[in-house]
Image 1 (tube, rainbow, N blue to C red):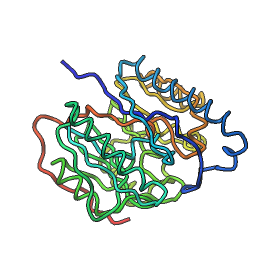
Image 2 (cartoon, rainbow, N blue to C red):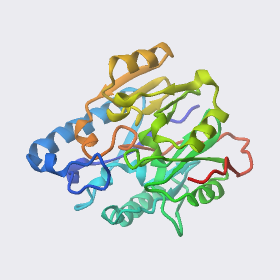
Image 3 (spheres, helix red, strand yellow):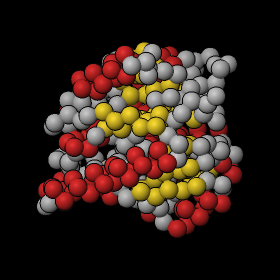
Image 4 (cartoon, rainbow, N blue to C red):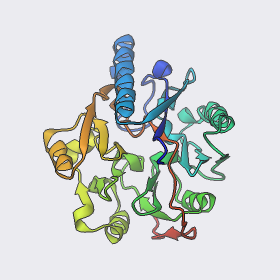
Length: 297
């Protein structure tokens, strides 16, 4: 029996856009009417949770921490596979205060039996599933590096999980995590935004996908955070897509659910950023751990 897809989300009570650590963040816009923005954000968070549950997923919500508004993006908290969690080390001082409450939350998940092992990245920066995306169709992680995550983290991820990784160095500050511009889908396709990836990253992608599996997002798709999507079986949940992207995915047999996440886009996040899947498993016959496509950013 297939386990129910289980997602971690963080209660948005402490969410706000209070600083700017990426080009999307607009604290001035938020500050013009914080109460209205928080109300709209809460509605968006609830809509995303409802969409996940309607698609058959289970959501576990943890509390945020006062003064840590970006805890609402738990994809950055850890990489999780086979019941093991490798906790993040944040590059920006504004987010480093998340590490202690997140470590406590993950220890709680371990004590509940939802995880079997919790460790942390050592000696470098790495920001969780935002920069280490499991591709179940191929049995490896796509691992981003550049603005937030250190290239050397890839080897730790490979060693900890015993699974291969493919390095995907990022090209811009705007698309600062891999999940903002790269989304493997359940049918083997990859939705991605080419300008956000270096030439070496594109080569690594092209080497591991057929042309019919590569779905290029355009500028408007990327700027609307539609690539930052959650794929649950044949359902894709994302920030409100334009009709063209919805049609392209529908033609592939996917059901596309759009959610109003405008308040989170003000902080540079979307549906994938706001979730962390806890039940992912690798193939039973694991390949030897290896770092593939050893390209430098």
